[in-house]
Image 1 (cartoon, rainbow, N blue to C red):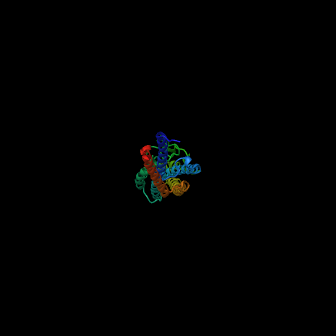
Image 2: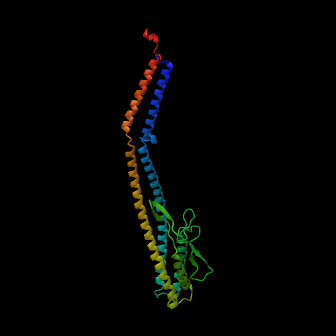
Image 3: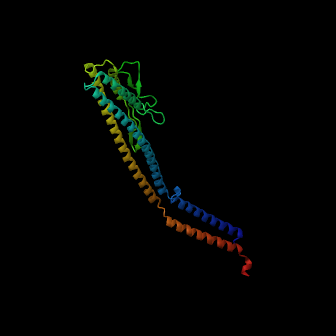
Length: 304
């Protein structure tokens, strides 16, 4: 059967296009370092790789949550630590005022620093984050957690205006961590401290008056129980939460490494083999072009 020049050209061009397609596909795999570029390359491996990719995406989201939450808990702990220092200073001052060795003038003088500590404690309890949200009001982030009513009688002017609801952040498969902490206990501390301060501010205060001593003692007890003890417990809880975040973050990092290794095994890409295959393709294509060029130059007259 006679083969026309047109048939020859079409056959050779089809062969070259197929070779070019294989070469381009192999080059894509080499550049990506992956054998499986589409499901048709290896259906079973493609499914396994997709599952690993999804798991990796979830783990990275958990890690992002952990990083964000860790910064928030550190800031909360720093604020609570500052409040603890303020409460301890007020506690020590009230202890000194109640020991019976001071005059009325001494108590008047002590009242000034205590008033400053009172104001500082209220401001710290109503701290905000960078977005203007209140940190210590539970999920009530748009309202100051410690409210103050100057028209109310002393001992009831401060109140907690937040709630005790928890903000939970997902940090692992079925694992959540509380992101917020409240200062509901500080309203009692502020009220009793203010009552003690007002008694000490009275120019005619009698340090040995049982009623005055009762007010100072009530302030001391509130500062110790609802102040020092409660703040210390919540700071300790935040420290434990940060340890949990560190542990979960380390576990996720290890799992990401394992996923990467598993993906490499499933994909089974061999760079050396792929490079050798590419060289073979290029040699074959070069030979095909040369043969095609020679055949195009052939003529029936060459046989005469």
